Picture 1 (cartoon, rainbow, N blue to C red):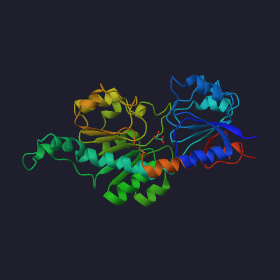
Picture 2: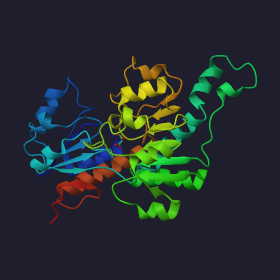
Picture 3: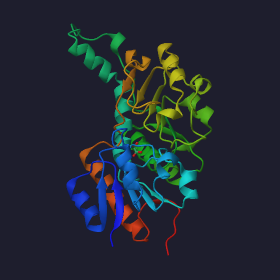
Picture 4: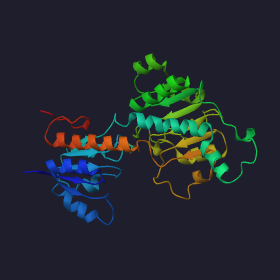
Length: 324
Ligand code: DGY
C-alpha cells in the first residue's frame, strides 16, 4: 500500500506527478487559517510532509502521530522545532548545495547595489531628477580591492569568498566555528574573531544559520564596532540582526548602508522605518529565487522524501539518520 504524504507548497507538475507515483499525496497551497482543519485531518494519516516557508512546530506535529519524515524545500531549518522532531524520531531533510551559487549571487547583488547606490540612483532617475552630470553627493564606494568579512564559512560563505577574491580582488576575513582550510588556501581567507572582523571590514556579510546562539548576534554594540564607511549585508536570516539597532545605525549613519534580503518579520511591514531610508537596499527574501534553482530545490526535496520513506539514505538528511 502507498504511504501518505502531505504537500504544503505548489511545486512543478512533473515533480508532483513523481510524488504521486510513490505516495498518496494530499496537496495544500500553504497552511492558512482557512485550510488549517483540512491540513490537520490530512496529517492524521501522513507518513511524510514536504513543503516550505511555514513554521512547523509542536502544535501541528500533534496532529501527525504517524509522521516519519519531513522534507523542506529550503536550506534553512529554523522554521522547525528540532528538539521536538528528535523526540518524535522524525527525519528532517533540506536542500543545500543546489542553491549555493544562486544565493551567493544574490548576496553579491546586494554588495554591489549598496556600494554603488544602484536602487537609490535608479529612483532618482525615474523621479526626473537627473538634470546634469552627477556630483559627489551621488558617488558610491569601490567594492574591488576592499575587505569583506564573512560571518559563517559554509557552502554559501565559501561561494561569496570565491566571488570576492577571484572577481573583485578583495581581502577575505571570516568568522566560523571551524577553520575552513579550503577557503584559506584558495582565496587567502583569514579566520578571525568577530570583533576584529567588524572593525576591519568594509563589507560585513552574514551567511550564518539562525540558532539560539546567532539570534541578535549583530546587536547595537557589535554595530558600533563597524567602520562608519562599512556596509552590512544580510542574506541569511533577519533575526540574526537586531533590526531596531540596525535601523538606528543607518538613520544616524554610524554605518554607511545595508543590503537586506531577510527581515525580523517577513513580509516586511509597510510601516517599517527601513522603508524610509535611502541607504538600505531591500529585497523580498530572494536568495535562491531563480527559475532554475527553485526547480532544482524541489527535485532535491522530492527525491529526499522518496528515499526517506523507503528507509534509504536521502541525499540531505539532517537529523535522525537511521539507515539500515
Ligand atoms: C532557504 O532555502 O533557507 C531560503 O532562505 C528560503 O527560505
